[in-house]
Image (cartoon, rainbow, N blue to C red; front, side, top):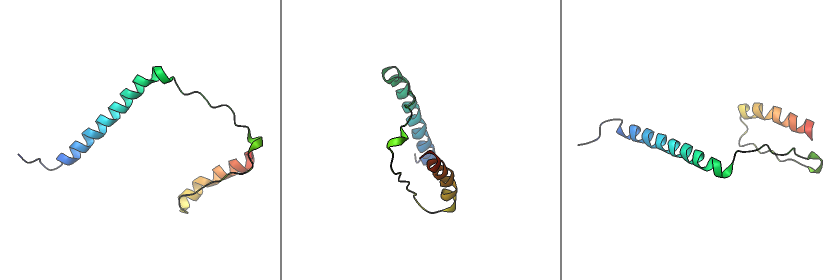
Length: 77
């Protein structure tokens, strides 16, 4: 019997949900072994001499999001 329309979409959705459940379950199983993530120690900025910031493209939205980051980097360093 041939699959009806939308069968491929239902299969993809089922696989995506299964992968998500497996990732979640694996995370729960590994948590006791690995522990939780701790906060990183403060960064010593005295040794930083330069910073490279790479943009994927020059679209206006990316530029608007990068401006506060660049200002903060300039203020910190």
